Length: 267
Image (cartoon, rainbow, N blue to C red):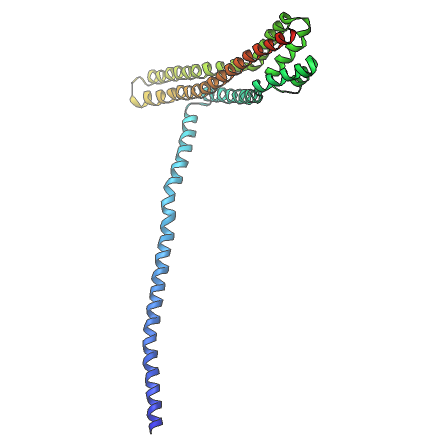
């Protein structure tokens, strides 16, 4: 009887524990389902926040394309061509000018002076021949005429300095032409658009705001794009002019140092 009673007691305890375990499992399943639902809601909400940004970017490009087409392919295409050609020339000049300033003129002057003291004019000419840049080219021409006297060397330096300055300013005048041409083309498109708007008013026989507003809006778009092109090219033009002035000042100072070296070696 004791064994039977103990067995019944054990079975009763197992049955109670199993009943308590099932609600805990049910609660865990409910919590897992709630967490899955919350994560799904977060995943669904995240793309919704990014959609307006994409729409704004697309709207900007579409608006720009729309305004360009409304301006008309005739004048707007010519203004765009001015921008492309002006930027091409400006980028080419910037690359050329930056390559021309890779050599340190003060270091070149010291190297030429050391070569003059050690190996004479031929050694100095070899240093200039192996050095790129306009300053080295001017030095080479001055050293090449140094055997004829200081005055001949000075004339050669001045003459070849003018040649190098012309190479630095090559095609820069085209940028200034495009700067002046783009706004004028825009104004011409505006005037023609205004004439067309007045022609529509004359044909309709009544001055309706819809007829005037549409023509004036299209006419002013060419002026806006022309001014934008002129502003962009003007920034590049001013940078190029400042770069050329810096290189020319460097060439003048280096030329004076070269003449001083030649005078000191002749003594």
